[in-house]
Length: 129
Picture 1 (cartoon, rainbow, N blue to C red):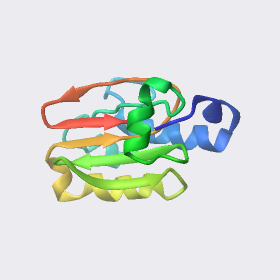
Picture 2 (cartoon, one colour):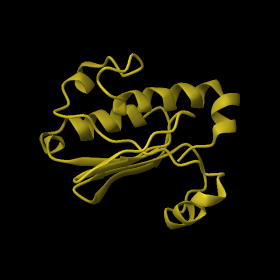
Picture 3 (cartoon, rainbow, N blue to C red):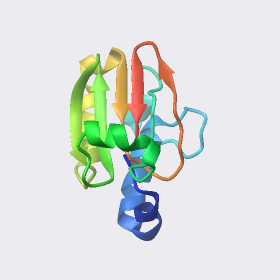
Picture 4 (tube, rainbow, N blue to C red):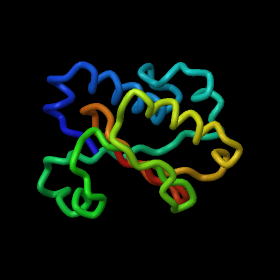
């Protein structure tokens, strides 16, 4: 979940969300993360960015009780693995979770990175940001 105004006005938030979004971008995207652990991921993950302030998203914001943005929810095998307000520890937690042996199975995630919006789903994975 993200707040576009916050990302535009707060450089720290923009940096964190861009870094996280880089994990989920397609392999051929020049903005994709160049971290070795990201390159080693067995498949591309899906990212869905949800604008907290868009009234069409009010149900999802309420369902996940999102009070602060950016907010990340990572799903793996239809279970919440990470649910947190994005901060300086988020990338390390993503690395730890996604680099683990279980990360080779299908993964979905809900993320709240930068102001670019993309939605994609596969049978076993979905991401939200």
